[in-house]
Amino acid sequence: MSAVPPSQSRGFYDESLLRRHLEQAAAKLPGPDYYVVLRWIHEILQPKTYIEIGVRHGASLRLALPDTLCLGIDPAPALIGGALPNERIFPMTSDEFFKRHDLGQALGAPSFGLAFVDGLHLWEQALQDFIHIERFAGPESVILIHDCLPLDDLTSQRNRTTDFYSGDVWKLGVCLKQRRPDLRMATVRTGPTGLCIVSRLDRKSTILESRRDEYVERYTRLIFADFETRPERSPATVGNDRDAIRSWFAEPPETRPGRDLKARISTTS
Ligand SMILES: C[S@@+](CC[C@H](N)C(=O)[O-])C[C@H]1O[C@@H](n2cnc3c(N)ncnc32)[C@H](O)[C@@H]1O
Image 1: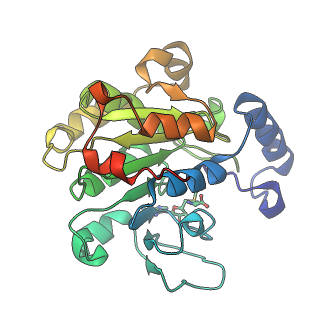
Image 2: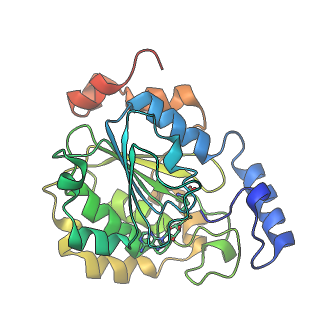
């Protein structure tokens, strides 16, 4: 989501509209915002490595735990105070990064712990980011996708005209749910526009890549009304609550993902 907290509001388009959108979002998705939820997830999973696509000022990047190696990718990073010792920033687009770098080498590990997709807010770019990252997934890896619960039609258009802006990233949730039933997904009902958790990733899966053009053509046609009237097409949601999220990760044995993920869930968090 591109709506910054009111204290940092740029009001580039229309400040009063931004305030109204923030109020509407808070009414629709009450409780802690995605920054709080992201921190909970770091505390629950305690990942060794974290990748963030779209870092801007570093507000979400800096929610990682101090011992987590963080890799941030953004063509226009504006981190407050520059990079911290546990952060490596790549000032380039995500496509450029994955063309020029091997994520495994950059992390010094064959797979990643946690990733957050929050770069360009067009769903096909988020799909491409997901495809790129999943190639480095292990049994313990988790990908978070921002903005899967859009507020309304205007703020989820592909062409941005508002400060509060999610783009059409929600379509990635619909696409993954339909095309990758092997994944395990849930969207946290956190404001301002939801945070989708994806686990049971498969680095060998090729369907998204091989059918990418067909999917882009098909899902780009969806409109906000499809999101509102067909909620069953989107990933199921989970409460905006630390215990609910923790329970989701610690799922029952019959649907348990890789043992590694379960083992990582801290008993103290
Ligand atoms: C919504 S902001 C990220 C906010 C940040 N994750 C947070 O929660 O505080 C989106 C960021 O994505 C970056 N961005 C835009 N296009 C991108 C691309 N193709 N690859 C990576 N980052 C991109 C922008 O420069 C911007 O800083």
